[in-house]
Length: 195
Image 1 (tube, rainbow, N blue to C red):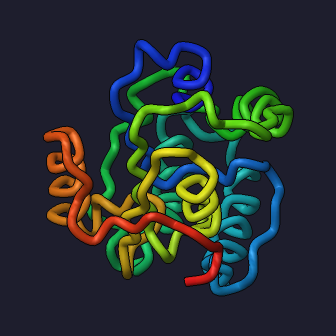
Image 2 (image 1 turned 180 degrees about the horizontal axis):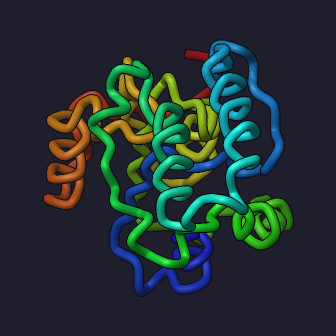
C-alpha cells in the first residue's frame, strides 16, 4: 500500500493516486448504497467454483484464461463491458494460481493492517472509485478520502473496479490534472460517508 509508504516516508511522496482501493479496514461492511451488492458477484463465484473441478485436467495457462474470463465481469459495472478487459495475465506464471496466493498470503496480510492514524500521509491523495465497484466497495473510497488529511474523491458513475475501462476520459483526465498540480474538476473533499 502506497499509503503506508507515504506515512513512513512523507518527504519522498509528492502525490498519490488510488484507483478502487480496498476499504481501510478489511472486512468492514458499508450500507447498501455504498456497495454494489447485486447478484453478479455470487454468480461469478459460483462459476469459479464449477471451474475448480477442471483444475487438475486443464493446462495451467488455459485454466488461468478461463478463470480471468469469468472474473473480469466483476471489474466493470455493466457485464457487457467485460470484453473490454484483456489484461493478458496468464502469460505471467505468478498469475496462473492467483486466488491461492491471494487467499493464503495477500488477504491475510491486508486483514492485519491497521490504519488508525493516517495524519503523517501529508501528500495530496486523489482517490478514484467506481460507484458500482463489486471488488472493493465504493464506501471504502469515500472513507479513504475522508480520513486522509489532504485527499479528494472522484466518483465514477456507472463504473466498477476498473473505472478507466468504462470512463477512460474522466479517469485519465483526472489523473493528468492531478499530476499537473491541481485537483480535478468534480473532485470532492469528502466530509461524510453519506452521498
